[in-house]
Length: 229
Image (cartoon, rainbow, N blue to C red; front, side):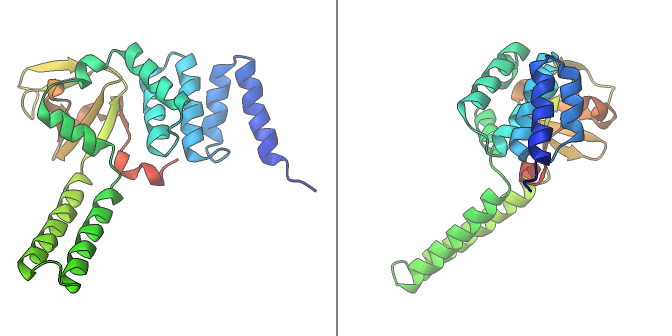
């Protein structure tokens, strides 16, 4: 006999969606995280939360879906739409060269640097073995591989967050400093320092976020997305 459990569960979600019972559909998805592939689950939850006007959280799930491999036109259009609705472009679009670098790094999974290290070392030793390069150049490949490995280790300690409510970014690592308010829905790239996070990206939000505001931040370390639902 055919197992119809998954089909029945899918039908339940579709019925709730078509009936426009979005809150119930959201609860259903949260209670059934394995009924879809991880990327589809995030996308479905994002579209459901968008209907509920929970836009910061919806963006988080769209970003998750994208990073997990769901990169079709629907996800791309959803991300463009929600960033526009949240008006995050004015924060995340900058001419600062550091923003271009960090934005590139944000969308690289952690294994990217491991693979880059292995490719660099293999290329160096391979070329040296067939006598295409000198020993000094081969050593340069080894040093480059080591640096890539160290960079990957350093970046793996950073986290990517989508703010769920306005967050205060202080000019220094305590409340005695002035602050600016970063609106909900903005992507932040942070480096943990003791009881604070240092904002690395975007440069317009540069400062320090205190960890006592962590409850209003939606955690989403893009380094760990491949292992999350």
